[in-house]
Image (tube, rainbow, N blue to C red; front, top):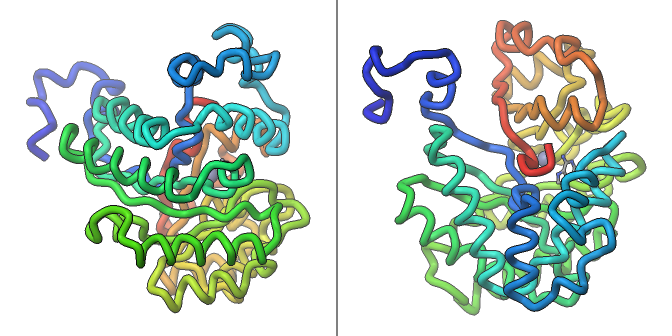
Length: 306
Ligand code: ADE
Ligand code: ZN
């Protein structure tokens, strides 16, 4: 608590909110790519001319950060992440995020990354992982914030592709591409991207393998009809955590099961609002869920985009 200033210095609720020590458990590193960073990295890589037509100026990028639903958001999100090419680009997204959240009171962060969105563009898994872990090491030392990473599979790709990616990652671990203590910072696997038509049970085998290898498991459940996906994640994948899970208020039995099993939920209010699952976040009854002892946390998801 020593980072909290004296009462006299805390002038407004806003100040207080910034200063309260926080854990951020749900943030996508690629989702921290703001328009300024996109330009900076593209310039460094002499790749300005490769940017898509709606990314040609800061203003046009900002204008395109506007979506009616998850699919529209994902299209822009993957376009933006194409700017990441080299190890130092991946290091920079971690360092930039830590620099920003230092002033938001963040003390600990669990950060997702989407390796397949880069390997499918020809970037080596080693470049991605080395870049992120070196960036994390520098950031922890520089900003005094602790962090861990979660490797996310893209649910709109096949399970075979997810298994291949996970096995490549295990091979890189064996090769000790960086020191062991850094490799241990990839603590879990998750499931993100386009949810409709891609239920969690599609990834049963790769999640089982990851559990056997000692990784924590989590799964995004937040698009239309996601209650069934929460149920499958809990009952069939045995996840340690649900990401979003906003529809849990609809099923009292499942909710009680998650309370008993102490399965946490990482709510992300701004992305939920911006991809227009609802105009009114009160529907999800966060207070009511906390009163029932569900472990609910509040997170930023893709802060540059929301
Ligand atoms: N990938 C990055 N952000 C995401 C989100 N909010 N939902 C699903 N996939 C994502
Ligand atoms: Zn997310």
